[in-house]
Image 1 (cartoon, helix red, strand yellow):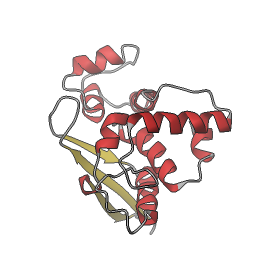
Image 2 (cartoon, rainbow, N blue to C red):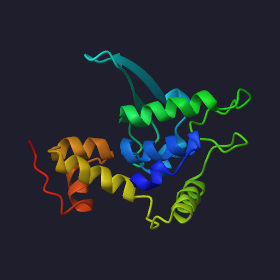
Image 3 (cartoon, rainbow, N blue to C red):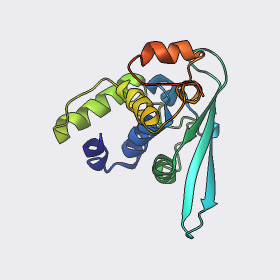
Length: 172
């Protein structure tokens, strides 16, 4: 994953890959987002650095319920850089668009990711791997089952357990 991210220079593509890696959203949910659904927040850290993060709300998700998501600093900064480079005449409400301004589709994202994998000689992987790796990172860092369930947008902890049976998850 790190080799894939390091090999991408296009602002949109880098932002999308980091977004998928860090947000926990499904690819289909990500391409449904509009720019108005993401709110950027800037915070000055104790050491004087400024960090940008973002939060968002997705009203159209797999379970048809409201879903709030968090975008950590690295992904938020890449997303902000991408939005700054979007063409002025691109009046599409979509967050992730094609070069012509149309909303990206799940299939276009899959082809884009696999194209980068091929060019960078990284083994192709199913796009759900972004979510699975996030779940593994969070579980390994001590994240509890209820929090992980929320990050992944599952309606019940049973869904999280079913999708990630090998993770050592605990309800705290």
